[in-house]
Image (cartoon, rainbow, N blue to C red; front, side):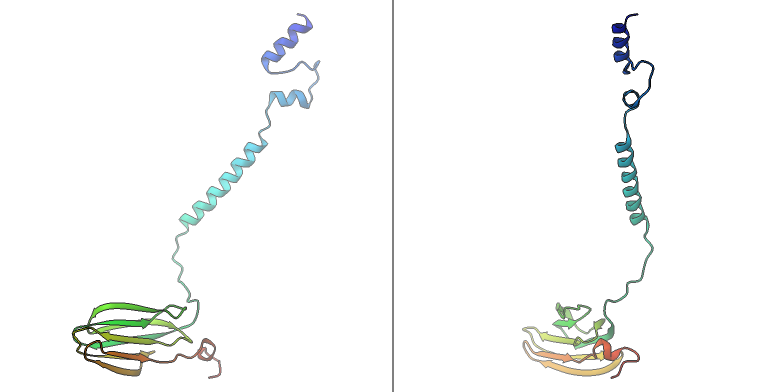
Length: 171
């Protein structure tokens, strides 16, 4: 075989005739560089593992309140219906409003310390009589009554700030 025939056969076989010497060029033609593919596969496996860990880690962890709270019980007595607005867990100080609630009604919520627990009632067009009451940590604080068409009443209290109400704090 001549030199030209050997080079042609080597090219057809995917190798190069290097005169019996093996060098980087000869090895690269024999075995393609797969480093990028291996790194990509490793990163994909790591991401998949993290996703599975997040999905499979379903242990229930109790949520800690972001700010200290106090148990507040709101109660509205009477007959008929009323719109009731009350301060609940909202740290922003926004009220929850329940419309046309059948009386009597009672709800205990956690109110952040430093916020004012509040329950407000508004009677409807038919009027009537209803009373609201407010208890903080089981201790009665205030009562108010509403009468007549669109009658209104509000019960409100003050909760100590978080620093005054914590154990060991002056207050």
